[in-house]
Amino acid sequence: MPDSLFTHDALDPSYSEIAVAPSSPHVGAEISSIDLTCALSDRQLEELRRAFTEYLVIFFRDQEISFEDHVRLAEYFGSIGAHVGVTTISNPTEDPRVRLFHYDETTSKISGDIWHTDQSCAEKPPLGSILYNHTLPPNGGGDTIFASMYAAYDALSDRMKSYLDGLMALHDGTRIFGPGTPAASHPVIVRHPDSGKKLIYVNDAFTAKINDVPPEESEAILRFLYAHCARPEWSYRFRWQPHSIAFWDNRCAHHYAVSDYWPAVRSGFRVQIDGMASPVAG
Ligand code: SIN
Image 1 (cartoon, rainbow, N blue to C red):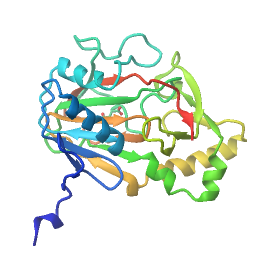
Image 2 (cartoon, rainbow, N blue to C red):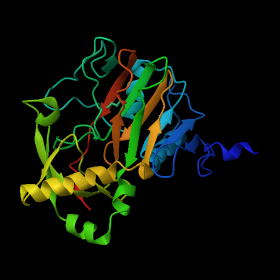
Image 3 (cartoon, rainbow, N blue to C red):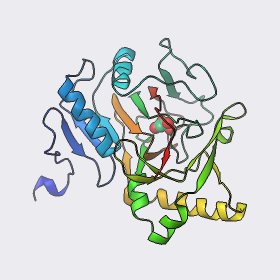
């Protein structure tokens, strides 16, 4: 039987400077033929940016990066961001631009185990996040699941699309981070600034309500949307290995960190890239 029946690692032929293997039909691609411990050439960078826009989440394997390498990769895409509601990055490391993501037997709650985009409660939510994990649980676990909000939008009925068009929703940071974190209203349907495509922009972690409709209606519509957005048809479950990197576009992909590995260690670092603008209605 040919190997190709069991693998989905065919390369996207439109890339020549880096190798891009789509991970699933709607979200994710694994990038190889690249060394993130070095500066990238202009042509590699142009293709990397294109892959990020096209695949929403890009993955790298076997990249043993330093803080400097991590920050260099992020800065190709924008300035390094702080956490909402605070002026410095939370869980800092000795490099103030890089945040520690470490879990072990002393961890009482693993963060991110709810479908979300990072800090959508901000007026200008982060463009993207780059998570590097050097240590993973020995028996597996600690995967991250990503979902395409373009595919979720496209699969809505025309009647539902018309209903959602023009609605705004409140995203409230206090739901996750507690007092002192901001809240902001964003359109329920957004147009991505780079791809120009429409997508669903509400998430279970931060969206408190749809504005200007009765609470029961908001609750029912949000429940429907959360179940719809989480469908496996437009999701991809990334299995980490030591020294893997996931770089996701917060503007169009939801993610969910699977909390199934306590008391094992999962450890790495994350850098967040500032959002350039508030989400714009589709
Ligand atoms: C997050 O939710 O931002 C972190 C994802 C992860 O730890 O896999």
